[in-house]
Structures are given as C-alpha cells and as structure tokens.
Image (tube, rainbow, N blue to C red; front, side):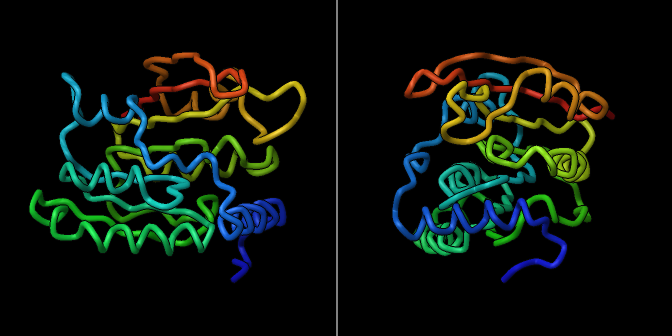
Length: 210
C-alpha cells in the first residue's frame, strides 16, 4: 500500500526494491552480520542490551543477531517481501531469542515516515539504507533518525561513496553525513574501506548528543 505521507521519490525506490526481492536479485543480503556491528554489541566495550532500531532491515539478519544477544529490536523495511521473510526467520528462532530475554518485531514501513517512539532507541543501525535514499528526502531521514535515538545512543551507519559511473546506490560523502547529522550527533569514528567492485565504503560511529 502506498503511504499517503510518502514522497514520490521514496515510493519509486520502494517499488524498485520490492521488485528486486521478488526476483531474488539481492546481492546485499549476505545473511552475515558485519564485524562492526558485532564489535559494538559483543566486543570488549560492548553496548549493554537495550532497544535497537534496524533501519532498512531487509530479511532480518542483523535484527536477529541483536535479538539473540538479548536486545529488544524493531526492524523496519519498506519492501514487503523482505519483511515477510524476516518474520518467518524470526519465528524459527523465537525460543532461542526468548531464552536470552530478547525480542524482535518487524514493521513494513518507509523509514522517512516513522513516528517518534515513546521510548527512544539506544542503538540505531543502518547497513546501507541511507545509501539509496534520494537526495530530496535525506534531510527528512536525518530528522527521523534524530527522533529515534535516545541521548547518548550509538548510530552505526554504513554507506559508500558515490560511484563515479553512477551505477548502483547513490552513496554518500563524509561531508554530507557531517552536514546531515552534525547538529544532533558527535562523530566518534570513521573508517574507510572497499566494497566488492572497488567502491569506497564508509563506516560511521555517531553518538547522539545529550
């Protein structure tokens, strides 16, 4: 269903991603959580389990990783086929998640239309969602993320730099991320790397200001 509050740009993106999931052409869905997330939740300076928002959760891989470690997780994606798969995966490990006191829910929604939560999240995770959001609504995305994050929350954000050939997702520059989030977040760390195909990737550790 088309959300009447959804922008035309976001609706077009939703259709594209829904088609990709239906076709099964989803190379980004590796089924493996990245080491950067695992470090944040199980490393030497791990965050204690709390409330987590997984933005653009796809089929739920990272939401389930968090829930298995005792987090209370909300996974959001606007592609209905992805959310349907995520729900099935969660049902298969429900007992395991319950044993450690975790929980997971999935919501099919446009992340740029989310309402402010009654209880903000201590971890907001984005593995490539902002990467594909049209420029016209990125300021809306930044506002939504700011609303979702509790004071001192970690916003762990992955994107890659724009591709010179303009193929694939739009990408982001470090300067754009600083402009979008600098008023509400402190950049604690940024690491550059490489994606398959030589695109320059970027992990950002952003801390919500009190």
